[in-house]
Length: 287
Image 1 (tube, rainbow, N blue to C red):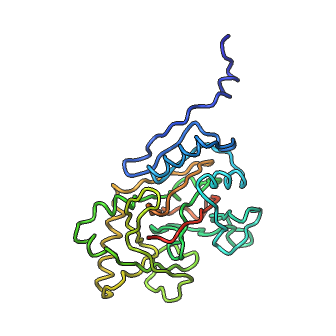
Image 2: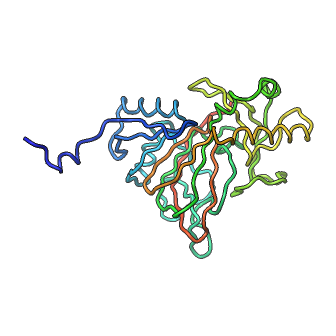
């Protein structure tokens, strides 16, 4: 008997992976995240994530609980680090990223404009292992997320630079809701020294672990030498050949590995609404 349109619509597609760029990233299709994730699918998702560093699934209709359940496939979610509660948000792992304002105050964190390249929570003892964003409202232009491959950034460094970084730590400092690098970090809310080059606990690959937004100095170097080295490293890791730019659509869910990627945000009109739901996963101290 010939299949009807209804039965064809209900038939699930096969799991498939499509690279998003030569630099990093992959789109996964054939998965409905409202459905349970069995052991086989979980392993496929993990393997794809470890290989491509950033994974994207489009057209996912997810509420808070479904997003957190998906995050749990990869590890335990962390409580929101913003120190705020959000109107309408029930799950303590969920943070809103939004420029929408009510009574003159943003309903979410990091509301406006461009944001320099960074890795989430690198200013803490145990930074987030991963970050997941789910797109709810997106401006017509801008507000894109750029991802840089920290593996490739390290692997393509000249040998003499690798030797200068070997065994050295970098100081990362952050001021709440800061989106652009500042010259003064004495009043930072949080700061921590981490290896300038870290080894991923699952893949065992080395990644360059400094970033323009929060990395302030390299341990054991005079300030001028440290500043010059950091500027060189920032420019190196942000080269276009290492970067994928994600143009958001509503109902996109995207997760990146903070241990081997950096991310940034492009500018967008303050007159357009932007609303995304964020969940992070508990990480480990970098080594």
